[in-house]
Length: 264
Ligand code: MLT
Image (cartoon, rainbow, N blue to C red; front, top):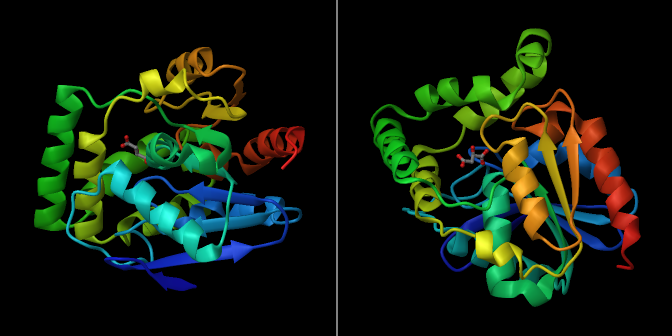
């Protein structure tokens, strides 16, 4: 389905019935990365997945896409759908957007699910690397960036043995428009540090991380868990950065244990 937000047309999908769960994808992915979770959770929840601006089937606008801007888009989508409080989940960049959303619209957040993400801002070196990547994408498209990224997104074992999954995700990443990829890279580089925000989170929070994630590591996740009061950390074995895609059963099991614990 599509909705015209203020500056662009956003693509989104709604499945199932029950208390609402909104899942925000990582970079440079789209809403279909959540298919294994949609299949499971839509049995007793309404699951909303959307393509962030510049990704998937949503239109691209000139960037940078600050995490606040992407959070505003999600907020407008919830208004359009007439939803009040939701469980909000995000993977990696989706987690950065979830932090921005919590900062601006915390009354709308019933619970948080933070997957393979981190609270810290980019270091100056990481910011510079993102700008180089953005310039390379503008010049040659996202192909080289995807080649560099894909080997870190999955474990070696999955890269060797599950070429169907890896190629599906590669295509998803390659189909991100250059304008969209640049907008997100520049937006992520600008994102503020969310470490202090963690201590103010008073909603049930589930943190999931792949045991072999080298981008947002187990120690990043442990630091977040240490600062978010009452949060729960689940380390999924044999998964790298795209845990819920690589090990959907482990990811789903964690979420399915977590959701019923709150009266939604
Ligand atoms: C993602 O998976 O969303 C990105 O790798 C996050 C990042 O580059 O910081």
